[in-house]
Every structure is written in C-alpha cells, then in structure tokens.
Image (cartoon, rainbow, N blue to C red; front, side, top):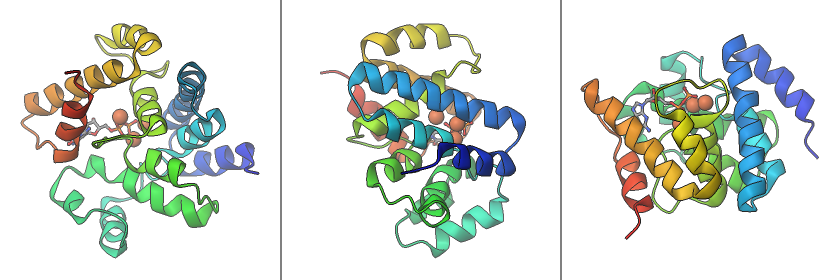
Length: 187
Ligand code: DGI
Ligand code: FE
Ligand code: FE
Ligand code: FE
C-alpha cells in the first residue's frame, strides 16, 4: 500500500512550488479521467504525483541515467532534453518508492512523448498533464471539453498542439510523438 503523503513530501523536495501544484493537478485530473474511462484511479493518482519527479535534475544527470539504463531507449539522447525527465523518473521511482507496477511505470515513462498503442493509463496521464487546472494556453478549454467525451480525440488534439509548437520553434520531433498522434487519428 503506497503512502500518498510520503510521495508528495518527497516530490516537494525535488521540484518547485509551481511544479508541485502542477503535479497534484495532474493527479487530480488523471483520477477524474480514470473514473470517466474506467481505469484504475489509484494508479492514475500515483503516476500523476510522480510523473515530473526528475524534471529539475541536471541534464547531465538525466543523460547519464539514460545511458546507464537497459530499459530506456538510447535515441532519446538525440532529441530535446525536455523528453528525458519522464523516462528517467520511470526508472528512479522503482527503487526510490519500490513501485513495481508496469502500468504506472509506463505511464510515467511515456507521459511526454507518447507512443503507439498507448495503454488507457498512459493516455490518461499524458492528457491530464496537458489539461490540468493550472495549464493555461489558447485552446486548452476546448481540449478539456473533448476530454469528457473522447479520450483518444482529446489526446490527438493535444499532440497536434505540441507538434505545431515544435515546428514553430524549429525543434526536432521525437518519432514516438508522431507515431502516437498518427495512431490516435480515427480511420
Ligand atoms: O513536464 P511538463 O512541462 O509538465 O510537460 P511534458 O512532460 O509534456 O513536456 C512537454 C515539453 O516537452 C513541451 O514543452 C515540448 C517538449 N518537447 C520537446 N521535444 C518533444 C517535446 N514533447 C513531445 N511530445 N515530443 C517531442 O519530440
Ligand atoms: Fe513532464
Ligand atoms: Fe505532456
Ligand atoms: Fe507535467
């Protein structure tokens, strides 16, 4: 049985106040989405609290963890460092909190990039990250509305926004993000 108060206390030591509030917002939104789409809401809460656990670790440390890991994709190192914190957190929390649940681990690992054939919990955490209450950007309310009706469509629109942002900034797009978006498009 996982002590949520302990997870929150440890998170608080690793991140800024703003990021801490964001993480609790993701946990709350993920819980709500889990209720709508019949996922495991306690797993959604745990993944939400911990998804950004290593967000403020130095890039060199994140890169080192990826290089040393046998479970993480090495091609992450060829793309933006913003992609690294989810995969690294998914490894770190296994030892730190003795979390061994693959669904939670994968939901944290893929919360930024997405991937093809995402699990229900992966979709929920990734979308919750995008629409939790403290997020403010043009179009977020529309995605919040879609999220109540159609999880896949909401997430696809979210990825569209991220991909457009990356193109605008002349940034590389990690292939898994393109695959995730294509996979969610309805026939
Ligand atoms: O950690 P958060 O700020 O809560 O959100 P996140 O983990 O979804 O990180 C999103 C950032 O990652 C966003 O500003 C865009 C950046 N990023 C850089 N390259 C990629 C990318 N996001 C995706 N999905 N795919 C990329 O290739
Ligand atoms: Fe993140
Ligand atoms: Fe995200
Ligand atoms: Fe986040």
